[in-house]
Length: 384
Ligand SMILES: *Cc1c(COP(=O)(O)O)cnc(C)c1O
Image (cartoon, rainbow, N blue to C red):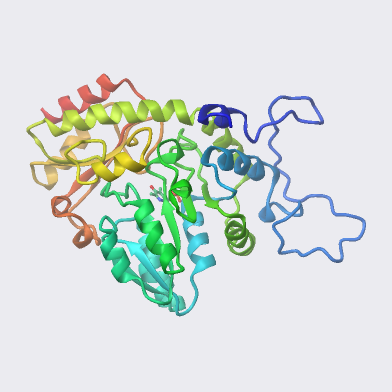
């Protein structure tokens, strides 16, 4: 089997039969030619080529590449990471079903599982601290259909043990979905650790250039087929062919970029940890981090480029620190080539779910690909 970098470059690409070009083209068409007698076509099918919302050429090329780099049987690519999360929840949770959900997840996962699906469709949800597998196990009920975790989690960087939670899920007949966005497949492969479904926001590391949104779910073919049919064709979360092409292009350099993100972030986390103005740093690569032991076991190549930290100062000092940064940009998102920082203040509605040190406000920093010394110098200057 070829290595990660070889797959990232070659899989999903082929020589274009019409032109001989060694890169597959972008196919922007909405529709594909029908056969002589189309009368028995299933218009809701995601098989074959009918209409781009049912699946298009560039979407399929990207799915091939992602399957290869994640070692998964099947993949569906959608318009955003949230479309991928929504696709999983919509496909596998119905009226009267129960989900066990990590108390630290991307905000839209919380909104969908904790508010929208319960209010609109009678889904029941229990939030748990999934860093403790015992809490997950205790929350499982006979009607639990899905356990959803995120590791490392956004925005607290909490680490959950994928294989321990997979065992709990499978012992109770539930599916385990893992949001792998912070780690990226270069650092962590949830399906190889027992997860049934792996969700990636392609918007982040996999595209890596901050210029296209997309999402993916990977796993067994029967599970992915259900998401494709229900969430892509009928909810309409199809990705644009142009974005699929851009993400395919970005994914080629994922291993190189992740190596730099991993290395630079570890150095910056150590720098922050030793700075007297810094109150706390959460980064699973630090040996002192609560999640380090589990992260070390399941993140095989590194700990990613995202960390959280807080200053030993009040609300305004946090904003004023950000205003003095010149290399790092104040903006949401992560996994881009440029470093990004966001101040998440004391009024976050989920604050009561965060570890104690986060409740006085904190930053989420996504370390980019700039020279490590330039990022450190930027922070040092702004802290002075
Ligand atoms: C950004 C993000 C998402 C959502 O992805 P979009 O592409 O923005 O819809 C989901 N999960 C995590 C962990 C994220 O960071």
